[in-house]
Image (cartoon, rainbow, N blue to C red; front, side, top):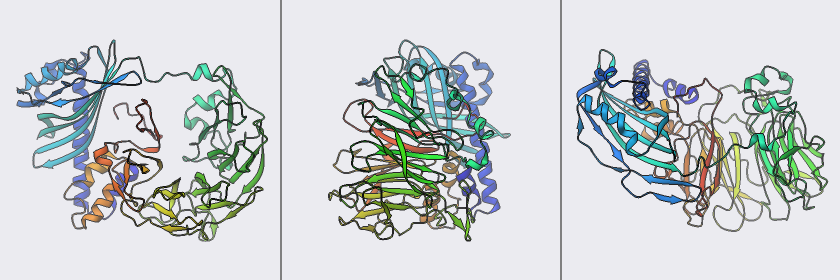
Length: 561
């Protein structure tokens, strides 16, 4: 992505290095296009003779096929790990024929989708080695999807790539015994004919062009959705946060599973809203609401039947993003921590939401907003306890998401904060409403463009681990891994720059005072531009799986994974 690609090429790199990086990007693009073109062999749109000149006469293919018995999992799908068997397919024509018939070695049906993404490139003279992620879907009686990592070796002749060797390094096969693990039910659940339907179906920019700038819509302001039983009927309801100018929407779940919009709930505000929490802040056993908006953090009291009225507003917290509640001081009520991504002021003047300050943040940025801990005193009285609780250290980052968990298993809630443009923050609770800054502990800093987080005991050792959603950049990974990239810098600096584009992070909790990066062995790094994640047992095997939300508004690229 642009964010990290510019960082990789511009920060301290001389012209020679930049030119080399651009050359490698060109080669990576050519390699990706080659594979995308060749994939047309699988659906009969390409004849072998048309690409014969693109394969060396002694070209070699190292293939793989599922030879182990698949393991049936709950949820209607099977997973088979590939056992890698080196074949003796050699010669351009033979390799082409082997590639053409490869999908039939693991599935029966028609290839419905094939994607290739180059994630690594190495240049040695006139030889180029690329690594690409491959995803192939075959639709038949039982759909099957292959996901793997391939390596290709090329020679460069007159600026064109000629394949010398293709090797399938790793892969996994998923076989769906049902049509799909999930089914689209939107039309069956939501009422038809609503005048606001286009809010949900129209493209993002449709509304950006029509909503007044006074409402301060920005690219980060339409990310919130909450699920909670707001009216006490035992059914989970849905609340959608929207960009400024569009009304936030509350749908009440009915006994038949459909959703009915609660137009008179009191929560239909039109302020740019990033997030919402539904929790019992006043101790009366129903779900109250707190919203993070462009005009501040706003509390709403629930009347017990799903009717809400505003009771508290903090206009001095106008740049709130992620929120998390916990009884950190163990006094019996819920307190609230709010991440403020942007700084409220620059050079003594107010800064509008959505405007990055100067200097522009890149890495280890300390001109972000001030996060706030609101201590609940009862009767809707909240006190700013941030500094008094020991949370002032590093409280000037571009913070997205906080999370409360007992990371050291001592019976109280600790705090982890994920930051964009720099290291994360971590605070251990002393048990007396005070925190000690542990941001320098091993594994905590992470150093990516952190945007989301979830905590769960992924390895089932009795401790909460962390999955952090970062930005993955194929270009950044390709460039930052080269020997020439910032060759005059310490390895620590090189590793830091690479981390900014490496993708999602899995941190194994050792004892609450240290974490270790398990991203590579866990296989979770590749996540595109990831915004958030959720730990959930999708297949009912008593182990936490990961659901990662990712994407960004950009040009449509159907070839991207």
